[in-house]
Image 1 (tube, each protein chain N blue to C red):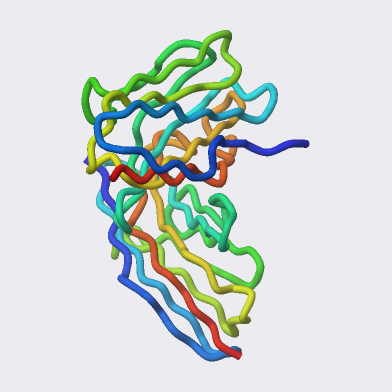
Image 2: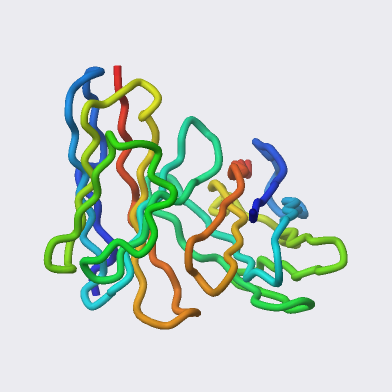
Length: 114
Length: 112
């Protein structure tokens, strides 16, 4: 069974440009999460989808970030326009229904804004 | 709100040494506690978990005990191997694996 897959693995963009990160969860996982780790700090929650609906987006830093999950399958996270402080590693995780089902993480996308 | 504090790294050990990585948490109620590991070039993997006080999670020789009285979940291994070199993240969640709160991560370097 394929795990959580994220694209691209690395992205380097200039300040002011737009970048779109993609996450393909494990097939059948209704719950999808985005997290971010900035410069060796803690990994922070960004948002949570249940199928195509945003369940909790309390961690989104500002309105330059837009997450979508059309059809309840893969998800995208767009940053527009990117700022220097957006640099970091963006992780995606998915899990099935049920409070105690394990969250499986992707390998992350390392975003560098220069 | 919930938070997790773990010891800063890097932690540098020789093979077969004893490992402790400290982790403490603050939370309302009784969170679930986790250790995740990130090996070089890979994603986060669940290493072990505990869901209530005095539970002991264990996996691959690693152990951690949920200590409510000290709000701690320290990671231990009796004899580390070079292959254990990775970044270890302590985490908590108010319920199950929902909305995880992580520490800053501790890099472990094990030399032969």
